[in-house]
Length: 257
Image 1 (tube, rainbow, N blue to C red):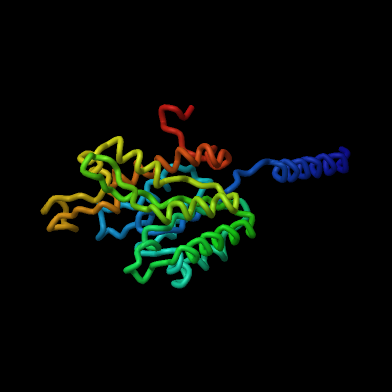
Image 2 (cartoon, rainbow, N blue to C red; image 1 turned 30 degrees about the vertical axis):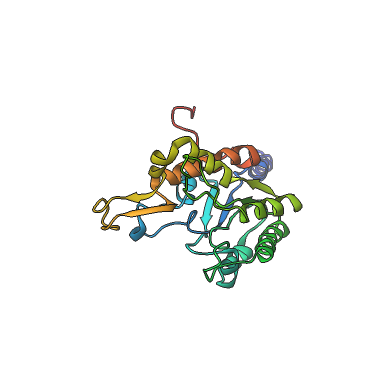
């Protein structure tokens, strides 16, 4: 028996195995970082049924996408940086990752410590974008989601007349992908009208939920239904703006074949 021939044959099989493993395409795993305020953030149980839209958004993707939601209640661009919330994202974001940037709600309120003057607001947005790009990640700016307010004629009143245009300006001047969530959410509110739109927000009558025994009328923060509807608005733009990421959106069972 020619043992040397069998040895050579065995070595060839091993080498073929290594080559197959080396050239087999592995699923690309990416992280989707989300930075922003309470309208996006993950809520503590004591706040339920208040829900940030980033919570249901995390359920739209397969296992190759990690949603890392760093949004925090009450934060502006300024306090997100000054409190050290931005630095871990800056340190860990990597090539091929994505960065959602949604601020404005707290930046624009002059009576809050989180108030960020207009020029500073733009500088912080550019800072986030520049860092992401330096790491070869993909930044996406998002205009602040609408607050619920209607005039006496039942028409939605825009609540971010200064800071939404600032986000658009930064996106335009720096050629950044942008989702106009302010306008999209206003359109949704207008479609539903003054009464039905309450279902999207944290509206509770006294005794309806133990976390709010006296009830709640909140025109800024979402119910579970509202958070999902807003997340679906964002997802619709993700399909268009980020086709590579769209491939990893989970298909409904009826469509997954």
